[in-house]
Image: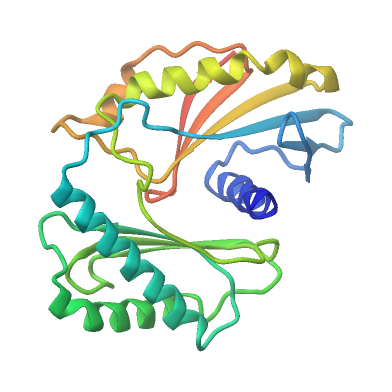
Length: 248
């Protein structure tokens, strides 16, 4: 499991580099404390620490909601098995299900086959030696799915297919971001032992969603975040969007 976690981190830091124009040119090397070091031509080194946004304020699940989650998890597992029966490519795939048009057991087979066909078509032209990511929208997918995020990196040796926001939906995303920054700030002195020129914190999330009907992205952009890291970012995977939170 630890090996797969590091493979996913390699994929995610490449995802970040692909989405953020300000990512410095240089060689990205996997490390520990921090997770990655970017070695630049001017001999400067940048440390990047990754953390996943954990919904400490997660919405409580009812028995009905948990049953729906179990059904969706099984559907995701079935789609992965169907895909891998005819392809060797290992992918990181996230599924965002529709809450408006829920998939019934009667439609499970057609949803499974159409979604896998769409994923196969999307990755048909990927290069085995390079990172790539694609977002399928509801126009590409059967009813019941809003989006599918697909990412590939040659370092990923084991497929990871999951529901989006499988850790839960937060009641207070802003507080959760503050908590994520505070936890990593406590460990910054450990990372600083490498004596790098800069330290960045990258917070990844499947999709910034709120249980309440608010403009969450706008609320985050107006919030003042503080950190001892030189820069702090949130990477929203389903939107392929980087949000800068702190710049010191």
